[in-house]
Image (cartoon, rainbow, N blue to C red; front, top):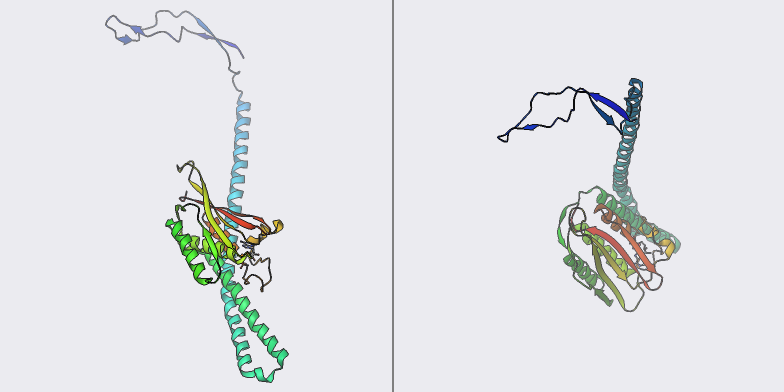
Length: 314
Ligand code: ADP
């Protein structure tokens, strides 16, 4: 609303400057009416309008606060059930070990003391019980290890990944002296701030799989990385590592499922067996370090596992 305001004199009366340069305010000499046209302002708000707006504001604030409260509650609940699940997995696997050991030992006693009373079929069945309890123990140990990983605090330290990769390669060479495997490192790996024990388990698991699920006469595994980010707080340095093999490959519809616990794509007697927990553990390690993991693969040609790790904890 354009309005005309009457003043008892010009409100912008200039300050007088005296001869010696001093500035001073002097009494107004004219009280002539001075009019000003005011634009871009509304009519004064009415009391009821101010009341309504205040009410509206407190309603909106109330809704937002309620939503924030609900979200905080859901987060807390989620955190609680995660911790409960972790401790459940831990307690369950820990407590299952003892009776299982009993079954295993008693089956062995039966075998030692009563094998001659059984026929070949009976001995074979008893052997199966022993084998299955052994397998169950392997699965429980994997679950126990997995749940421990989720509970343990990360112990971050500056870690030279060349050393970590070298150690994993040396361990593999010792455990598989007969096979010819070429390990490729196109350029030196960086040094990052991470839990050294966990990251070396990650490399060992990925390298073991790269060799295990490989039917080529000339096996090779390549470990490399790309980097992004400038390394300042707004744009931290992020590495994307890869472990590439020329193995059997993974069918497209299994690319995500290989990370599920106890998920194996082969029977126990193929490719040296396993519990199917290795990649679940690898995924947990990457996620605990704030990274992501995924795999690309071509059947018969090979697979590439990618994972991201920050140079420093943000
Ligand atoms: P495990 O090796 O004990 O079976 P993992 O969790 O390490 O368990 O792997 C899950 C499954 O994913 C394996 O059984 C295998 O079928 C598949 N897999 C893992 N790594 C590779 C690889 N590099 N190439 C092909 N298949 C793989």
